[in-house]
Length: 274
Image 1 (tube, helix red, strand yellow):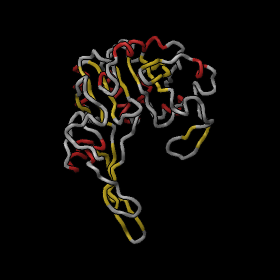
Image 2: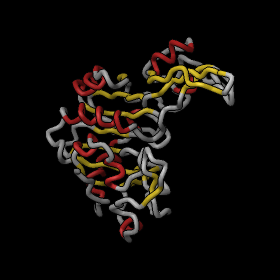
Image 3: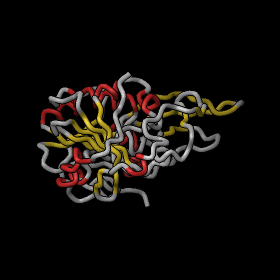
Image 4: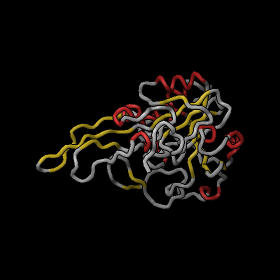
């Protein structure tokens, strides 16, 4: 299995990002300004219909759902700058023994493994250096500094010691970070092929649901950012790349302007609940 290399001792490979970032909270403040086009990749959600029988609740249906479909169900507007809370329009998921539809919140700060694999496949066709890329990991996650001795292995519920390229190393405290506004990142060298391999997180000692917060190739053809507070991922690159992301059947992506507002105030077509 292919591995990540790092954390790198020199963050120089990512300095260009800091030099091109615009206002925080905007598209070009999340990935660098200057790309031909930008896309917002919506983290997938799951809808479950819960029913009730004499012996308790029962799951009637469970399926993936796109944000656009949910907006249609809720009578809100699907558009590139839509926000999760706003398209839900105040909907409250059923609790306890209540029947009804339950909409699972999208993952925040990370792309699910299957979505990352598909995004990486598309990204790999738009760079001359797919085997020479860099991944950034926010250094504020508790598991990064080795606050625990074990990680939760996905799918089993068991905690066990896992290979970890940086936990327990003195360098995790002293290695230089890539310093961006409000965030510092550990950097890793990698091939895009890493993210197509099942279980790459466990193999490399990452939390099982975490993906790179930053990702870009050595030739700088594009840049991806899964900002830790956002439930969507931003990609900047060529117009052809953004078109391909939008046309990928397994992804929900929309083109967004570089000055687009990604905060909860950015959805001006739907009224967010108080």
